[in-house]
Image (cartoon, rainbow, N blue to C red; front, top):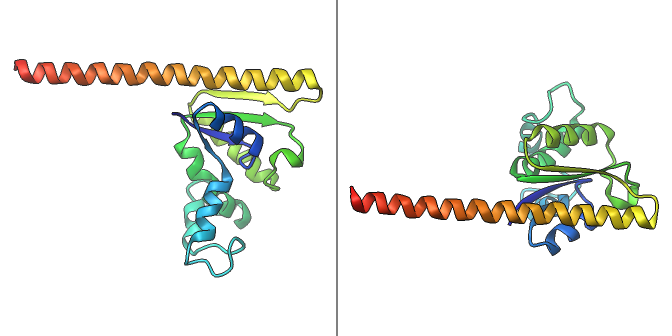
Length: 169
């Protein structure tokens, strides 16, 4: 199972496609759920804790508006966890918009800079483009499964070799 960051980060469509392929979608809803359940927050999900803007400083400078830092304090850790990413550009609000252009730009910057396998797509306008997009996402996710399986096999073989070397030494 690979942890896949998505953009837009609250896209239920992307999260569903990823989970159907057996991977974990790093979606905003999961992070917000943790916030809503946090007893330190008086009026969830509108308030933030005192630590949240400080966490946001890891991803955005002090001069950046506080709203961006607040959003990045939630989105940033998801991006840090990512082992892969799917970015859909030009998506309409209904596909999953977080409503802040600067946060969107910063999140995409971090995803591209992250050095993980990334699939970038343009939001489809026709039925054929939609089918093509879903096929590309499925192919990408399948390739992650194959590379993850081969990495697990390599790690298992390395572990076996370590045991053999210990017994022989």
